[in-house]
Image 1: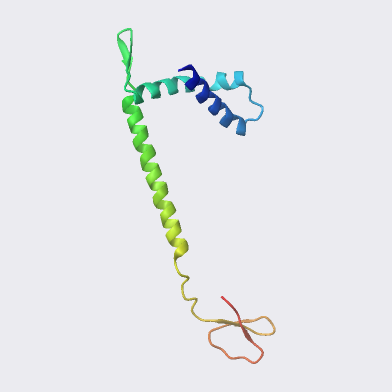
Image 2 (image 1 turned 60 degrees about the vertical axis):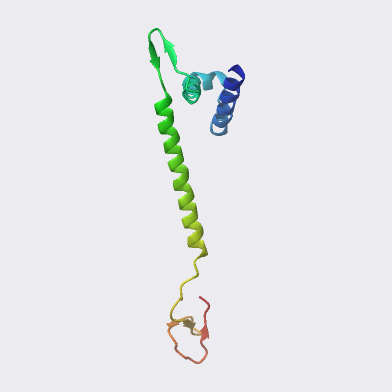
Length: 123
């Protein structure tokens, strides 16, 4: 699993460097070493490989299943919201109602008013 762990931590360090440009590897590993354990437990849970240690064990499969379900619901919600935004953008603009006319002096006149020297404005 060495190559996979190195790849995982290298990617995490790259993401961390985007916002913390001065961070070094030792600082990153000091602050985020728990990610190694997290990655190993998730890998074990996804592989359904429960580790027994001195008579006790930690089975992360239930937690991982819950996380996967939450991720699925969040993806579905984001897709629904994107679809609603797309539909909202496609709606025809509503009838603006009464037209506006503007006098030479700049006064706005709502409705169908005929005034010499006024011009109809676009909505």
